[in-house]
Length: 116
Ligand code: 5GP
Ligand code: ZN
Image (cartoon, rainbow, N blue to C red; front, side):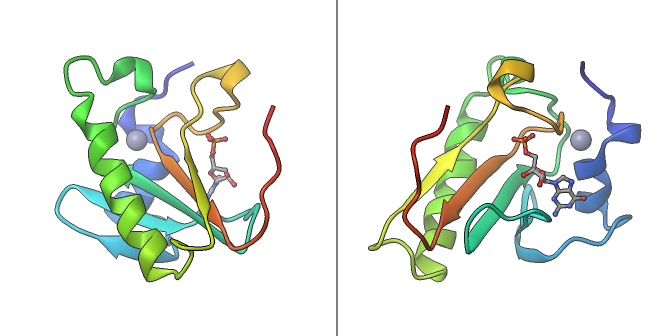
């Protein structure tokens, strides 16, 4: 289920080995447009450090808050903070996770339906 960082797609994007449509970067986090957007705004925010799933954050759950803080700023930058948006993280198969490097989705720019 979990990949190591050597064959992880998002580690490669974070390292610049695979091109990503990057919209934000700092020393620990990077954000880029989703390749298959589900809404006019669909950004993925990731830690540069490989963590396979949210089950693996262990004692570092604050990383999720750091992802959210960046998502909130990006929502404002994208002009969807007032119209509304959704942040979400999928975990493992039944949660819909397909890339095993944690990421927060930021979705907005249209009326979103209920998921699930
Ligand atoms: P998950 O299903 O794991 O929560 O979300 C993975 C997301 O990564 C999907 O929305 C998918 O479209 C996106 N994705 C998969 N491969 C790539 C890629 O190579 N580049 C980018 N920018 N997004 C990708
Ligand atoms: Zn990774």
